[in-house]
Structures are given as C-alpha cells and as structure tokens.
Length: 262
Ligand SMILES: NC(=O)c1ccc[n+]([C@@H]2O[C@H](COP(=O)([O-])OP(=O)(O)OC[C@H]3O[C@@H](n4cnc5c(N)ncnc54)[C@H](O)[C@@H]3O)[C@@H](O)[C@H]2O)c1
Ligand SMILES: O=C(O)C1=N[C@H](C(=O)O)CCC1
Image (cartoon, protein in one colour):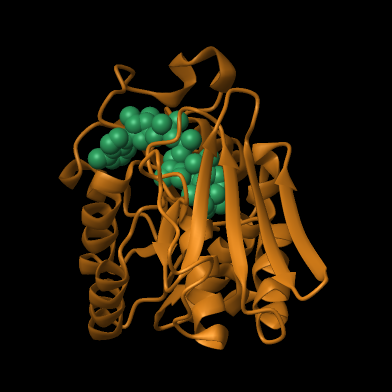
C-alpha cells in the first residue's frame, strides 16, 4: 500500500483528494494537513465519519506519519515551501496547487534530482485539459494569432490560471514571441486587452457557478478555430491524481505536467 498524506484537506480539492485516497484499496491515508484544522482525527468530520487518520496543523509534525506521497492542493503562497519540504524528506510530491513560477519549478526540479525523488507538479489533472493544451500547441503552428480565455469560480486566488500560463508557454514554444492586434491600439480602460504573454492575450473570467474552463481561440485570414475544455465536477481531476500517485515513486525527477505520466 502506498502511504499518502493530503495537504490542504479542508479545501475543495484537498477534501476531494482525501476521499479519492480512501476509496482506493492500494492507497493508505496516513495523515491530512491543513493549518486551519481544529480536529485531531479526520473521522471527527461528518463527511469522513468512520475514516480515521491523524490531522496535522504544523508542517514538521507531518513527518511522524511517514508518507511516501505528498498530495498538495493548498494555496500558491504555501505550496512551494510544502513541495520543498516533501522533497527534502524524500517524499514524492503530487502537486495540483497553481501559482508556481518557472523559476520555482526549476529550483524544485534541481532539488528532486539531488534527492533522487520523483514527483509531479500539474496545473491541471483533467485529461480534457491536457488534450486541449496539446491540440492548441499543434494548431499554433498554423495559427500563430491566438487569445486564451480562462474561466474559473470566483474563489480562485491566482490569475491567470496555472493552466492558462502553461498553455501560453506551450504555444510560445511553437509561435515564438509575436505581437498581436493593431500596433497603435490604446486601452481606454486599463486591462481591456488582458495579460500579455509573448504577444498573446490571456483573459481571466471569475464567476460563481463556474468550476474550470478554458477556450483557446485562434484567428486566421477568413477563418477561426476554437479549442475549448470544460470541467463540470472536481471528481474529474482525481483520475490524474491517482495515476500520478501510482507512478511518481518509480520516477527520479519532478515532472511539470500530467502529460509526462500518461
Ligand atoms: N491541478 C489541478 O488539476 C487543480 C484543480 C483544481 C484546483 N487546483 C488548484 O489547487 C489549489 C487549491 O484549490 P481549492 O479550490 O481546493 O482551494 P481551497 O481554498 O478550497 O483550499 C485550499 C486549502 O489549503 C489550505 N492551506 C492554506 N495554507 C496551507 C498550508 N501552508 N499547508 C497546507 N494547507 C494550507 C487552506 O486552509 C485551504 O483549506 C489552487 O491553487 C487551485 O488553483 C488545481
Ligand atoms: O479551481 C481552480 O483553482 C483550478 N485551477 C487550475 C488552474 O489554475 O489552472 C485548473 C483547475 C481548477
């Protein structure tokens, strides 16, 4: 059985990941971690009745649980330190928290190599999102003019979304740096044209009712192409999280994207 700890278990994704770990017979939930928790045992929460696991509210205390895998769905401010902590203790991180910079990822990859510990940081664990990014990358070869519209629930902390940033990075690998729109355009309201990544514009929509959605819209002469992905249920991320938990212990590097494990 693979021993797993879930960080951020009081949150939307952490709670879903905790349920996923409990449902899989080859996983053992050895602990849950969240600084806002007031419980000592997971089973004190009605939604986890009968499911015993120690609750930790302090980072160093988690080590007594001896996890092999550290699932992280926390907040951008905490996730870099959590991932570093996991790697320093040869615990394989499976991180869904977004907001990592390219420099953060590079530094953590170097640490993973030094520690000979495998792991994964993925801004999106849904299969449709991975495909949307890959199809978009293919399309950018023929349609370099593109804008990204990402749409999320209104509790989201980071903007643009991790998925939008990764999509832009992948598109930039193909189309390079290319300014778009009229070179003389002026914003009468600042921000009207969205964020600028290598000339591509990224627009972040935040509304109640949404979960996670992204549209990559390409324009060519007399034609257009839209590639869209929709997440209707957080359960959809769990296939990817479970897959990563089964594969990262065999790896000796920290991957950046679920596609490397598919
Ligand atoms: N990769 C994916 O597929 C995917 C999918 C959904 C969400 N996300 C990302 O996951 C993250 C969490 O999203 P959410 O909607 O569950 O957020 P949330 O606000 O519901 O939950 C975050 C939880 O983290 C806890 N937390 C804060 N600091 C912590 C720390 N130092 N250590 C441990 N826990 C800490 C909070 O108390 C909270 O319970 C976000 O960054 C979001 O963008 C990624
Ligand atoms: O709910 C969120 O927050 C999500 N964030 C990811 C991102 O930033 O790309 C995608 C999945 C949902």
